[in-house]
Length: 449
Image 1: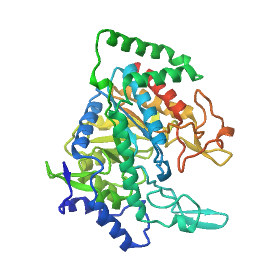
Image 2: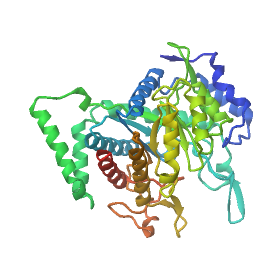
Image 3: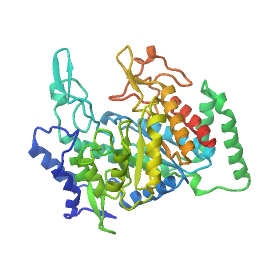
Image 4: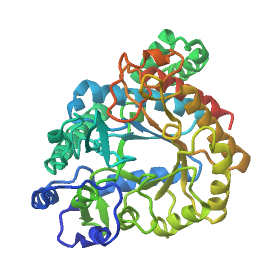
């Protein structure tokens, strides 16, 4: 149980420190009213669930499990529909089934979902045709439309984020426990994908193996409950600190602070300043914490982050999300992994092969090459194999819809196709076919690790 309490001032110690990437709220009184209301709202997740995820991630840190984390670059209020949520969940469940079987390893499934409504940006303003307006920072802050009214940060949107996240979690819980996530059904979806995918022949042998294993268990009368439901956790970047601290509560069992906006939260590459507000906030809560590490990350950065966020060296508490770029991962990652391992810390290492591989196509669309995404994951696995450490998982931006945002993949998308269904508000996502291609290829890599 987690309760509201006046004594959660520990969740506000960040306010005395510089906070990067925060909205410039024009009406501070309106903001105070919204935050007071949010502080009275029920938790979106419970402390016990966060503890359970931390235990699951502890198994990943020890090399006994694999983390699959994925979902939208930025969620949108107008996409909180049953179809969009179901398609995203379906894709993650399909990827998880492939990875579980091929790797013979439990897969911890965490969505970038139910809270991923805020985005850091490289510039505070955007100029089009001589007009300069505040940049779009995600639906939690302002509107995507390029108008002065839409781009003014509006704190009422923080309440909309809470309600949209609540609706999403409600549906996810229904799907994952109500029979939709039954392993046999998920496997049937994968068989359909293998049949229809241009690269499907490559995966046919693996699909047949899974089929035989399920048939064997069925013949033996084995029908475990674990086949019928699935553990699924929510995560997002803890970016807008006003929102995150308004949803920080004292756990009545332990007196510890939990950010009940999601099971796991992470700190991005642009907000991981060691003396900044985001790291201070994360250090006070008991949720599992992720930190993005880009190519400029130093060993000193990583070791200091461990001291600040995981002083007790608790497996599952801290996840390092490497986002190096395909051209840098083999050079930059080995020293970090080696020195962190030598320090005795048991962190989870996962690969974000998306954020270091973005470029602008001639059409003006921001995109990523599937081959670059795959190459970064390959490099990540190679580094861990050479060091004898555990490649703990992948962190991908994906959707369950047939968008055309990343080029390549088995069902190949060309640069000239990008305009057909380019629907993301920020960064390009893998579509369902590309996501499943990636899962099968990662499963092969894990098998050979």
